[in-house]
Length: 380
View (cartoon, rainbow, N blue to C red):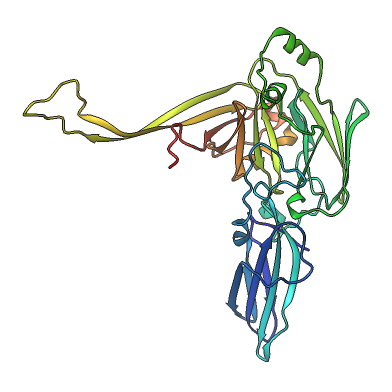
């Protein structure tokens, strides 16, 4: 059972001294793994051998079947397939040799993830591990829950601790659908990412006042400072900093990381919203009976719309989180939690200079993002 990262090439190589051609059939599906070939492939590929070898690259074909549509709710057991970032892939290889057609060879229950490998990871990287994030240091608001992405087939347990006391634990059990091969273990059972967000989601009205602020200042609602993830790679220790920020509004970006998991990145400092407009013009005929009214515009707007941009400052992150910002910039899919809505955005900043504590002392990243829609609704 191989792992396929669909944003990087995945090669299937066939070679034999008598090889003439190869047929490759590919079936992509959800739920539980097949135990035999089902004869219902989405793709059938044929290739003639060159120098007795054939190589297929199949990632882009599989990618089309992974929607990865994040709506603000993190996938849970039994959730729909639209938000899942995984699929099963079976394929059958049938070789034709100079002596005739050979018996087909099946490869079943390969797992496809909406992830990628770096050049340094080599061809067909597997990333067989339980913890599906690159950072062992997490910064989050002090009233926000923590979510840890894991592969339950490679993880035995996850434990949350605060001041040396266990506050939450999870253990892998049973057989998981492929949609559940990325699980988001959290000390929050349901609800939003802040006290205000949870009030609004419950149908209430949030009224900010001194008493509420004093309460939030004094108590961490979901206390956690250390998380232990036990997986095939051993025990990963995640240290958590709970940040209190009263001056600036906080923004949470969610993106798909290199392992094909939704991951959060919080921005704690000053933000700035701006808008640019674009229009199509035409010249109107305003003459009536050999005259015209001077208050009638000759140059008129045919269509006009706007694009909004948000500039965010991360606040002070440790140098170990540079990899997290790298994956944010490389992600094809990014969302922001904005005014209690989950909205699609695109990172418009095209370059990033990695900062170090030696040269930069305090590490703050400034990024620009575009809301991934026009300001005036023009969906038709």
